[in-house]
Length: 529
Image (tube, rainbow, N blue to C red):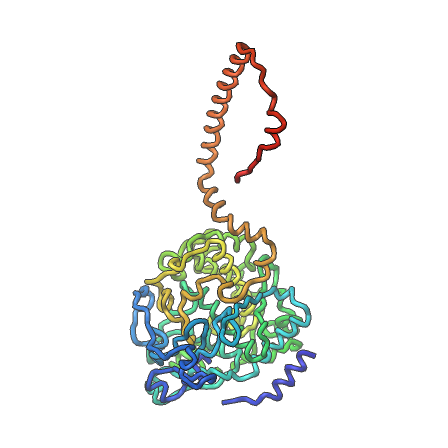
């Protein structure tokens, strides 16, 4: 019934003609380099009359970058978003959005003063109705145009520096597919030349904060198009899974009976068309993905290269990753050793934390295991399993934050790969968000995970683990101290006992066994841990 209702809704909705706010995707805004739209509540730019925000010049980080990208002034994403806009809305208080018309994550109400905490749940713990509603919401997002955003179909230079805007409408789901593509695409250097060692969302410190913001924005858009303010993304806990247990028609689509690379026709995901998967074609044409349909979702779970990814990640690998105390290290890219980020992302061995790019662990392992659309970085978000997977990866990030309680300064302020310093704005989000803004607990951003809430003991254990790990490192000293202390105590006790015997043999005084009853009842006992 729910799916029928959604289908009826799609039939009624009339399409209208990404990531760039629609109201700023025009010649005037590009030439002025300004994106400060009016808030419909009072008609003033950024809701200034209502004290929501003001139009201000963006403040770019001046911190030095790492050596991975040796160019300057060749990519629209450098110093995001200054190539397109250098004035945007700066919102006050708990307001957010490209026109300050929304509430920050974790707040709600007319004046954004009410705290709100939503819970992301295991997809297998949803009721049939809840699960069907989630699938229907996905299908709705795939078929309804984005009201607020469009995507760029050309570079700023191809737009004649703003005088010839090149933008296109896109549905809500594909908007996020395009954003993931745009953040990870290669740099076009002209002719047939490209630079591949660049990624504003992967292989560096921003990987986890970027995807955290990405999921929150995706969640927010679903809430807006459905009117369901309580909607949250479910997660798939893939630890120790022997196969793709969500690859069934009941959930994310089973396997086609005659073509193992396609989805079962019984799943409506089989009718979905992918976008932004032909990176070599775009590079050859020196063009951007324009969201043209490129065929069905491909997926053949488990038929991947076993020498690279022999199986899905295990619980012990996740626990080892969580034990790593350093968020980032060394070169701060996929060659980093003993880095929690690099190990969770999957470029370091999940048993040693030593970089090994010939293998794919944890996060990367699941992408490779799916052996299809999910296995190509730029177009991986086409497969809706992407959402469930990254929600669980985000929950591991959350466990690490709660266990180690890092200060913001733990996130690198400088010398990270381009776009990944703490104060860099995330590509290609407008409104603007800095990497460091999402290096905080999910509770501060208004959401939690069901399995992190359940046992109170689990939270206590997470609190104790850092101290237990420190104790483990110094246990030989503790044992030695205990042995020496025991010997000293034994010697002293023997001397005291000898003295008492000698005294008892020479003194006629009678010693009470304990105390008088009145004194005994007044004694208070305390335990100290």
